[in-house]
Image 1: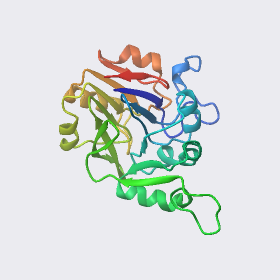
Image 2: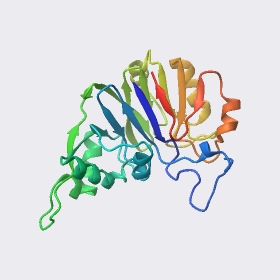
Image 3: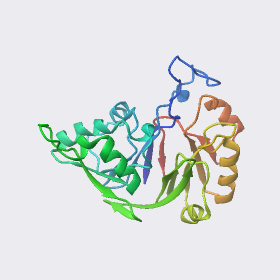
Image 4: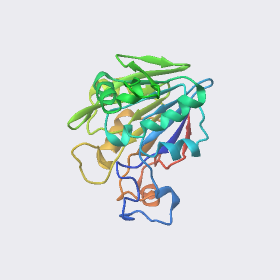
Length: 252
């Protein structure tokens, strides 16, 4: 299985508008982070997790012209608001794009972006998405997904186990059930927003404690804010833990 990190930045990206780099060295290309999204590939299938506001450029860089499905972790703007870019794929492939989310996420998105899911009265443009509700484990082609709920402060988000790889973006706490589902994974891609605590995202210190508990062979940190410099993290992190960067390819 192969995962491409399409984006590993927080909701404002790095740099933030105003060229705010924080502690990140602007000369280091791996500090330039778009909003979080990943592409999951197996032998016959490729699936996008989250449609970030940067998704057009992300899919162009990854040379993607078709998707077997899109999966959303939750309804926040930095995970969903690139949704309209899926229109090009629907037109190109002459069929609706299949999308997956939990009940609350799809309920919100079908209201917020109603024209994507149904043809509105008087609108000549057809719907571009076909929704599927996540109620437990599911498969898209030859990729099996095991979802688990994550505490994201005021809401819940979904994490996923996909065979040997786990993805836990946008969370501040993970319960025992989540750790049970992730037990035995090879690689864990996990939120580590900043050094200091945050009300909706796990900080670096806590993320490292979780990694020590789960003991994956490899851990990759994502959703990183402007205070987490790539080269500094490389020096600070223990063996087996590394910062993500846009375009990073992970195989397991």
